[in-house]
Amino acid sequence: MGPKMTRTEIEKTYRERALKVLPWICARCGREFTGKRLRELTVHHKDHNHRNNPPDGSNWELLCLYCHDNEHSRNMDGEWYDEVTPGGEQEPASTYKPFEGLAALLKDKK
Image (cartoon, rainbow, N blue to C red):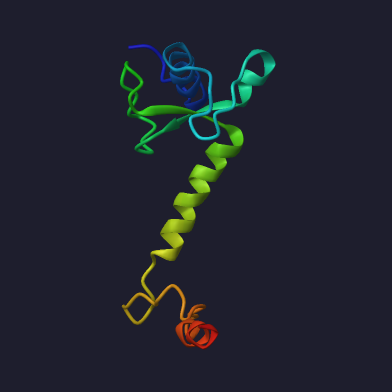
């Protein structure tokens, strides 16, 4: 067996494979990438497991830098909001009720 590959070498390998099997379009925003701008297209692992690289590319999607950052930010935000409070119960997302009393206001308009 040869020397151990670095993370950068591994990423380069699956990125090259992904660029061969997937269209050069961001799967989120739909922007097309060619030429020098192709470097802005990144490989996103759908299951977030960078070791899961099937030859058919079924665990990959190409995302532009911005959409890729957004994808990972959403996951981090979701994990943060899903945390249980110290008392053991999750707090309601909001207590504000913007339409409370709307029925009474509309009833007076008839």
